[in-house]
Length: 332
Ligand SMILES: NC(=O)C1=CN([C@@H]2O[C@H](COP(=O)(O)OP(=O)(O)OC[C@H]3O[C@@H](n4cnc5c(N)ncnc54)[C@H](OP(=O)(O)O)[C@@H]3O)[C@@H](O)[C@H]2O)C=CC1
Ligand SMILES: CCCCCC(=O)/C=C/[C@@H]1[C@@H](C/C=C\CCCC(=O)O)[C@@H](O)C[C@H]1O
View 1 (tube, rainbow, N blue to C red):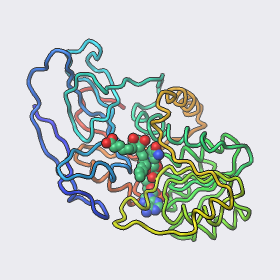
View 2: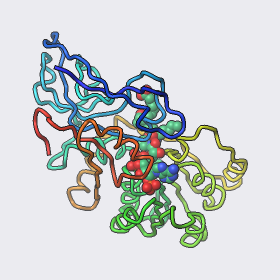
View 3: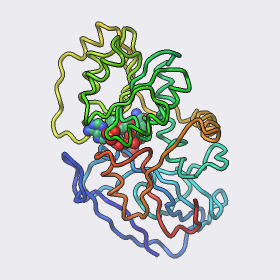
View 4: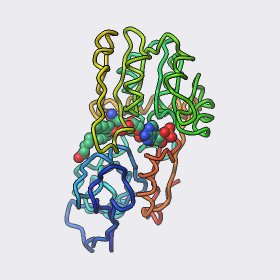
């Protein structure tokens, strides 16, 4: 039997493209050793951070997947067990059980793919990132990449908590969806100036900026659109991930200082032990129809590249995942 995996055929430099990836086949052994399992990817996640790490020619592409145990000699992982694991972009892999994580909360009737999205790493990012901003009812929050995996949840959770939500997105479809989700103001940054738009709807500034994009947004919002005592969460900087040279902005630190802003760095895995609490709460909201989830599902392992590169072109609405075909068991 053969498995497939992607390696970085060329280190990223500037904009990622097809040439950075090579799909290779590898042999899987006929027999497992005692304690081993053979897993097959069912859904794979593509996420912006994959553009940054490890970026060494020849290295495997990293990432999380939901996999099914299709052969086992390990009593802890019976046949058909579903596991979340950072096995990278591979269709199959052998494991001794280390790093295979069962789903740690009751999923109920919610689709299993959500464990890579709203009830997975991006969901935890939205939930704990927002919490770190200490949101209060009637405050104003601004979120960038607002129709994405993280941003769409941040906006909805903030609405549930009584905040006014301003979102920035890159297309009219995304704008309409965010309005459907109940965001108060949504702007397409490709057809409007985000600074002017913010000044119109929040002339006195915003209390929270949940930054998924970095670059121009981060500096302009910190320098011109934060209220005194405001909080900025540095969640991600997708606008700069593909830069070749570092950008220079002089005024930012002075603005931070003068306005006594709190700027938080944030890594969702720091809250890993508490994720099941968040997912139980969010799954209840999903099942009640109060938290809406969209996925951009690409079908077939050969479409990993397209799904990943699409993140940087704004192709995805909601969470981008890849469903592999010919799974041992067919999941919805
Ligand atoms: N700190 C942490 O622990 C974590 C951080 N993150 C970060 O959160 C951010 C969002 O991630 P995630 O929700 O998974 O991804 P998304 O689902 O939001 O997908 C990426 C989106 O970013 C937008 N985008 C891409 N390029 C640009 C650009 N140059 N300028 C402005 N917007 C752009 C696009 O939306 P549009 O069409 O609207 O432009 C695109 O759809 C990323 O920066 C990521 O690195 C994610 C997970 C954990
Ligand atoms: C400048 C980096 C910003 C990245 C923001 C982001 O998307 C973070 C996501 C993390 C992600 C990757 C974190 C570290 C890389 C580790 C590389 C490795 O070899 O494993 C992952 O941990 C989930 C998010 O917390």
